Amino acid sequence: MLIVSCAAVNKKELSRKKRSSEISLHTQEWNKETDSLNLNMHISLPLNHFVFTKQKDYFMSEVIFTLVISDIEKNTQLFRETWKEVISELYYESTRDLDNYFKTEKNIALMTGKYNLFLNVQDVDSRKNWKVVKEIELNKVNHLSPPL
Image (cartoon, rainbow, N blue to C red; front, side, top):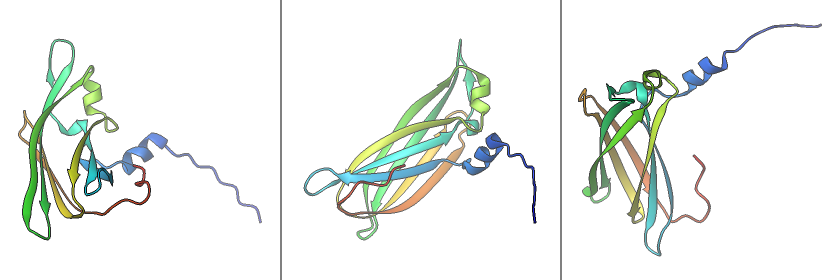
């Protein structure tokens, strides 16, 4: 028995479906000193969620990040920081592209333990907010952290 088939796959459409349209927060950790760990957070923002304003020769959006880290066992807030980042793109089409992301990182030294991460991302122009909540457990690392 012989079966013959023809099919075509639109790779660009397939990659768009695989990508999340939401803000993502990925973490890695490694030993920093004898008693602490470095928590590295990779944050990806899909540009098509934000309002861009026309400048002289580019498009700009301002984003405010608020990161709060709490100790789960002690129910205490250990870290809180707010910062602003400016996203700029040369062409308007780049701001609407589903595959275009703004990426940023944050490093924080913490002790081993269980933590709640709360990240709020706000578009300054539209005042729209996105929230990411993640629970992590930090332990001493005896091997390489998984790749992102």
